[in-house]
Length: 356
Image (cartoon, rainbow, N blue to C red; front, side, top):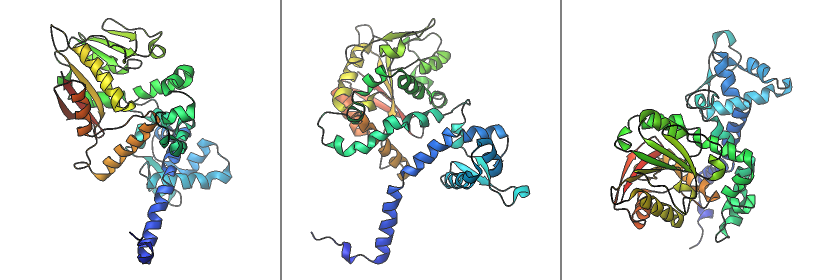
C-alpha cells in the first residue's frame, strides 16, 4: 500500500513533528530528576522550612553566579513536570520561589517513604546507558541487555562489584515504607501462617516489617550468598543462602516481591515449581504470595498503563518482563498451581496469591 505521507495536511505534519520531538527529548525528564536528587534540592527546600527563593537556592548550592539562570531554567522545567511548585511570595514579587510537591517530598533523604535512592540506582550511568544497545540486543538470541553491556550476567556483575551490590540491595529495600503502608489493610494475607520464606528477600527489610506485626511468625530470608553473608537474624527472623532454581526451604508460604519480573517465562515456571514443592507436604498445603505489577490496559488510565509498559521495556536488561493477568495465569497454571487471587495493593502493584 502506498504511503499517504504526501497527502497529509500541513497541520497534521506539524503535529506529528511535535509528537516525534516529544519522544526524542523524553530523556530530559530522567536527567533533570537525577540532577535534582544529586544537587540535594528536595532536602534543601525541606530544611529551609518554607518555600525557597531562587537566590537563596543558588547561594546554598554554591554554583557560579553565571549559572544562576541555568538553575532557574532547570527548576522551571521541574515545576512544569510537577516535581516542584512555583509559589508566589509578596515580598519577592520579581523572583521565583520554590516549594515541594507530593512527588518531590518522596525525594527528601532521611524521611519516611524516601525513594531518592531509587533514582540514583536506576539512573546510574553504568546500567542506564545499556539501553543505547537495544538494537544489538534484539539480534542476540539468548543474551540479556546487561550481558552485552556489562560483559556478564547481572547477578554475577553484582557479585563482582560490592558497591553496586550494596546500592542495588538498599534500593530494593527503599520502598519498604510504601509497601508497609499498603500492607496495613492486607494482614489477612499473613494471618494463620506459622512460617514464611522470603525468596530474594535481600537484607530482610520486608521481613522485619512483617515480623513486627506477626511476632510469632517464623520468617526466613532466602537470597544469594553475597547478599546475606554476615547478616544476623533474631528469634523469628533468619537468613539462609541458596539458589531458588535448585531448592527453596519449606514453609507455609513463599513470598516473591519483585522477583519474577526479572526472569523469562521459562525461568518463572521453574521458580514457581520450586515454590510449589516448598509449600506442599503431607501435613498441609500452603500458598505463594507474589507482589508485582499486573498490566490492565482495558481498565487502567493511559498514564498508568504507559508507566507499566515503560517498566516492562526496562526489564529487557534481564530478559524479564512485566505481565498482564492472562500472562500471570499461564505461568501459574503451567507451574502446577490450581487457582489464584489478585488484589490491588498500590497504584502500581498488585498482590497475587496462588494455591496448589
